[in-house]
Length: 138
Image (tube, rainbow, N blue to C red; front, top):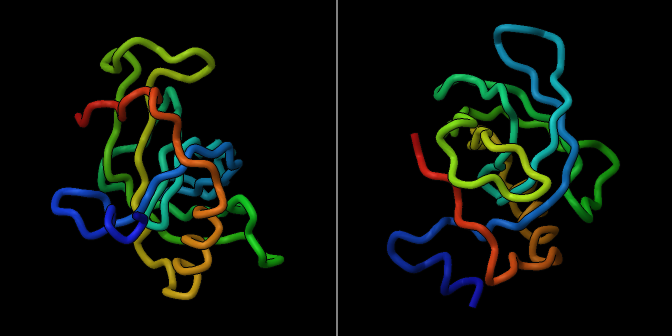
């Protein structure tokens, strides 16, 4: 079924998984890492809830350790802010979550790291059927 999802038209390239992954985000405006937490992860990007999202198109460097990551080092990758949801524009707030955030798209993830990440994510439970829909694009 996993392969079927990837091959359907208008479907995602990779399955997203709900996670709670601490990450450091370094943007071009600052060399100081911002400690944030990704709540949604795929082999192609992540969702980070934040009240202060960066600008769409802004490039960042991410460092994080995916769930069940077999390597000693953190995964460090360039990414681009692909979408932003402002706090006031999101549908009713989910309990325990922040109202806004940003979607980051990995820019230079090496093939072997992408394959390893996909393997790790297959071992993470799929989202529940009643999970809240993805925030609207802005």
